[in-house]
Length: 435
Image (tube, rainbow, N blue to C red; front, side, top):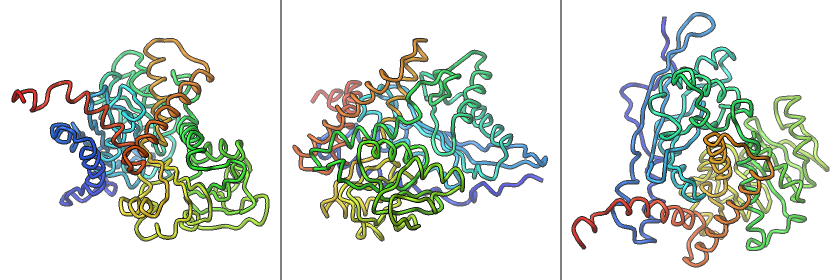
């Protein structure tokens, strides 16, 4: 018998709470720039979203249905670009909001892309490797007409690692009848991936923070850092900052965290996680103790790096946040209420659409290399990433000071200027009514 336990209630109306909150940032940026109303009208809703039900044959012979989505938010600056995530909490609202953020992230990084996103509502920990492959290929089969190297370019996200992306790329090539490496980025090197992609998101955030050190009065030899989320991004961010002298005092993953005011070695913590499945119990340089994820957010530190899920800092706990600087390496880790309260209290929040833009920046380089058939070495990739992140970070910081607005508002203003140019170049009401 077919089971549909992964599908939402058919009578339940989808809520767009996250997208509505994201539109508030758009509205504020439009007001700051006195942008033509046509621009807001075009950007307040996604251009197109496709939903599908993926029916998978399980190892025991049964079939299960998984809800899946792909959204192309806006393509004025080029084909849409964005990851696909496998997670049990994926929803339509989340996918459309993430694609909205990607639209602005690509504009902030000055990439020739619009924003897209995809996802499947699934707990991959409950699937066998073979079931995961079936699901990955089924996703491409369902969305193949929707994606493509000049229309919508996919990439990895939560729980879609190298092997998942390899299956997806292989399936797309099989469907199109030709090798199509440019349709999906974040591929393994053997599939046409690029060097420097594994740590690109973390390295981009690292370059952003280093660019702001003097402005934020941060001394790497004395500054302390707490990192929530110890997956790919959190681990590489911790490793890069630790190597530069920053003291990592707290690290957490989905099962909890570890705290040591004398400092933690990210390599040792990751080794412990590989051996035990958790960062808890890892030893630091002093008196180490286990803490919860909630406690990690509230640690005494100079820099807090949320690198896990959305809405980890909310109205409920934002008053207990002690970090002076928050580097958003996750997408949307602060609720709008928490963002406003912390900004008013004097905290500096380096927004996600700037801080974690390193991943899509290097994905763009992979796309370029795939199209040309010429591949760069790691030093060239990193040099390009460093230049991009430093240039755009300084531009956002300058707007933040000149306009006396938050860094988040400054980032949206910076991105909106570029998007608005592409919208207005096609003609607005002012052009057609002769005003």
